[in-house]
Image (cartoon, rainbow, N blue to C red; front, side):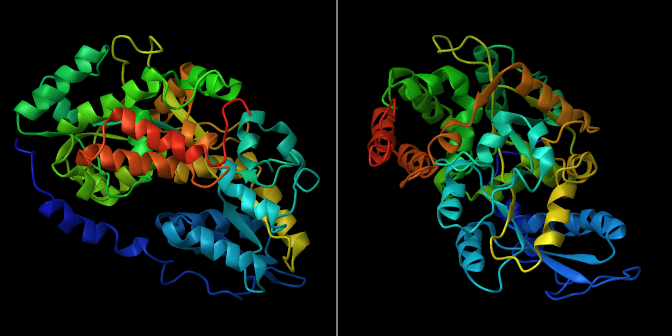
Length: 434
C-alpha cells in the first residue's frame, strides 16, 4: 500500500470536506426568529455566537433540547470563521447587533473583552460554577480581578492519533520508548507511507505539533513552574533540545511541510494517506465524520533519552467558555441559558455529540477512544504551555512558536535561533518570575 504521496488527492478531498465549514449553515435560524409552539408568554430570541463553523448542525440539535424545556426562548446559533472570529466578536460586543451569549477564548485572549467591559462576571449569575475545578476556571478568569467571565465549555488534550489498520499492515505497535517511536517512523518511511500528517503553513498549528511530540522532553509542568519562578527562560537547553527534536522529526512529515495547510494535513490523515496525526482531542469528531471507517488509536510520545522527564505526557488546556454580553437586551433569558450550559445535561451532550471533554462534574465519556485520551491526560498531565501562560501580551507565545517553527522547517534558523525568537518576542511584555 503506497501512501507516500503528493497533496493532490488530499486537496481534492479537502474541497468536498470543507465547503460547509466557511460560514453558518444555509438553513441556520435567522437572527430575530421567535420561539416555537408552547410559549404562553413573551417569546425571546437569543443570539449565540461561536467560532465552530464545523459544529453548526450539532449545536442546533443540542439547543433544540434547551428550547423544548424553555419554549419561550429560541437560540439563534451563529458561527463565524475561526480566523476572523475574535475581531468580529469584539466589534459585535461593542455594537447593538452583537450576541447575547458568545463563545469566548481562554486565558490571555479573554482579557481584552474583560478589560473592555464587554462581559459580565458570572459567579453570582451561574451558581454551578462553584462546583467546577479551579484549574479549568482559570481559563475564564479576569487576570486583574480574578472574577470568572465564562462558563467553561471544554477541555482539550494533545496527543498522537494513529491509523490502526496502517500500523497492523506494517507490523507496528504503539511505541513504549523513543527508539520504538523512531523505528516505527523509519519503517513507514521505508514502506513509502507518510508517517506524520503535519502542516506548518498555518503557524498556529506548529506549537500544537511541538507539544504533542516534545512536551515531556522540555519538562511539561515542571518547566512551566521554573518559568513562573524565574529560574529559567525559553533559551533553556531542554527547551532548545525539544525544538531540535521537532526539526529532526521533519523528515517524517509531508514534503514542503511549510506549504501544507492544517486542513490538508487533516485530510492526509482521514484519507489514510498518512499513518499518524499529532493534534488535539478536538479532532476526534471531525476524523470520525470525515471517514467513519477510520479505525483510530492514540498514544503519548515517549521522551528521548536525556529528557527533562522520564515519562510521556499529554498537554492540555481549557478551551473557551460561554460569556454573557454586558449589553444584552435579554439578561433574564440569557441567564436561563447560561445556567443550562453549566448542567450535566448540556455537558453530556457536548461529550456525546461534539466528542469534547466537558469539564462539568458528572459527565461521562461513552466513546472508548475519548475516554482513553482523558485517562492518559489524567495519568500524566502537562500544560499546553504557550497557550496557557503566554497569551497575555503582544506578541503571543503560540504565534512566536509558529513563526519560529516555520523558519526552522525552512532552514532559515536553527533550534537555538528559534528559541531566541520566542524569548525575544515574549520579553516585550513578560519577565520570568513576574
